[in-house]
Length: 125
Image (cartoon, rainbow, N blue to C red):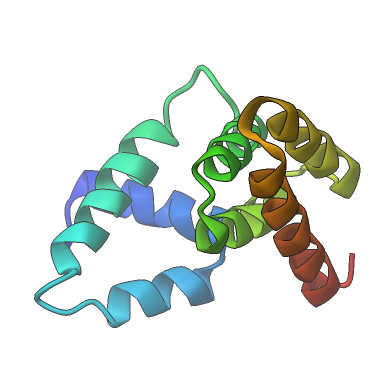
């Protein structure tokens, strides 16, 4: 798992999600999910997160809204932490989730608010 795009993605992925989480995901990859980890690191983090049009804060806003729409609690939790690491405030995260509630539905937003509160508590925010 070492090429330029992978290494570039690994750097961003660690900065946004935290080295401990990312290193564990890579270390615990097996023959079945290693290709997934490689593709996620190369293309999500190496290619897309490094494009110049949006900064990381904007990308976090987009991700939180999309993950709420898709009702993906594990990924919401991960990306709330990433959003904080990318400079979003608790109030900004609240606004993203409120807007997502209107366009994606109340049940999805309720789950994302619950998850965000858990992360804020864990992070002492």
